[in-house]
Image (cartoon, rainbow, N blue to C red; front, side, top):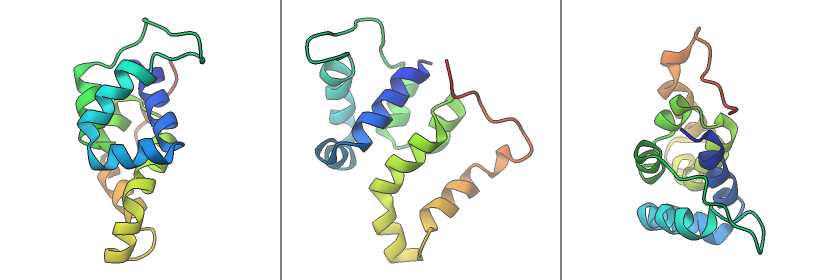
Length: 121
């Protein structure tokens, strides 16, 4: 796994309201677009050909699979913030404050007492 590339996706999409909206509405298309045109950008004039997503990473991002991303080593804070941005209003309206965060913790309960996956390269 390229933790860097997955984390770059989570970071850049979370900080751009238009990308975040597109990721929520059509994750498959946004992941493909990001991987082809946004992810390779190093600056306005430089691009990289070094990184690409694996099939597992791509599917986890498309499916908003926060547990798979965590277990692959995506940074938990980046994962949490992007999915809060996507789901928190909906979950709070249905289940009350911090409901998404509580569900996230419950879905990762099998990690209790174990070392977390490394988040750096």
